[in-house]
Length: 254
Image (cartoon, rainbow, N blue to C red; front, side):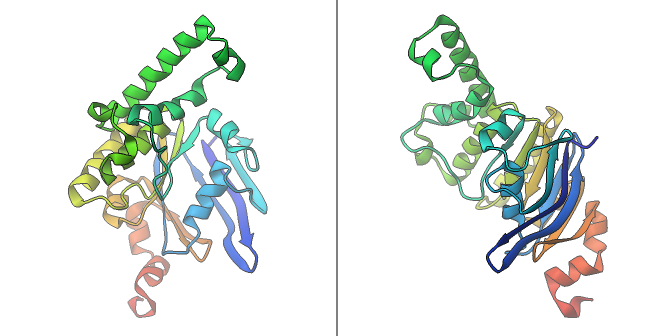
């Protein structure tokens, strides 16, 4: 059984067909990339998988269980985390506090238990804080834990957002353009980081425009064009696919 299965998923916004009958699988332990020109439907697809949007048709299955249409917090509790194309950190909170927000998906304490300051909630809070620190350490920004997250550099903010997604202990992590705004050195570091995350047992589904990064780190690549899947194969096969070349380089390329 595949960890994630997208089965005939479609989404329309008025007269725009953003995603049309898209289907593919993500195997456990893989790094799978989703690429395509601007407007191809990549971020919409991520919204459908993570519960931000409900599909008009089709199913999204995690470990064989349909999750489409469920609230995002329920999907996160089942082991699916994500980052966003545009950084969404909480202002006025430290890097550690931002990461702890992600860790709380693994907590059991509710509002009432926290308000009553029960002893077991203190232990849980310490455990979640340690998980958040470990996530910050993994992405290389633990020394910045006590700094205001929104005052960090762009690359550091990206790292904090990634740490927040990792702090919940996801089995599947969706990354929406993680290299956006990074320089060459930072992108090379990101490639190594993705490998370390995969080595920790996290499966990755990545939307990315940096083709060098995609081809170097991915096991498989899905290509979207105008909301439809036009390829799903190993990176080298995708590079040689005439239809993909045409989409990226134009009619004369073929």
